[in-house]
Length: 146
Image (cartoon, rainbow, N blue to C red; front, top):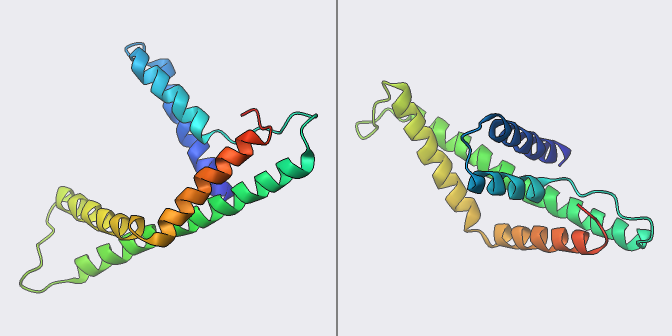
């Protein structure tokens, strides 16, 4: 879970750095980047007057939700890898030959999209996403100032 949060934060910092160093970046892009950074910012510690027990439970709920969503996303990534491996191993008459990096990239994208679609349409994934959103909202409402 910590690795997932670190990756999201690193991406947000990278996007922010790119926008900050590019004077041609539009105002809309600046607003989008700010919202993206806020969305994936790690929740800050609550204010001292907030009930620590309520906040602690909110943090634990959020951590469990991130862990479950991350588990499902990891499963989708593994599925994409299996699909790519199977597609590359297929050497029958109907198999498309892979002779360029672009064809390999296209195959990888197709495998990734198929794996994502299979995951995203599962009831378990919808429930995990709903819990992640609800836990995030509860964490913010519990007194986090992030």
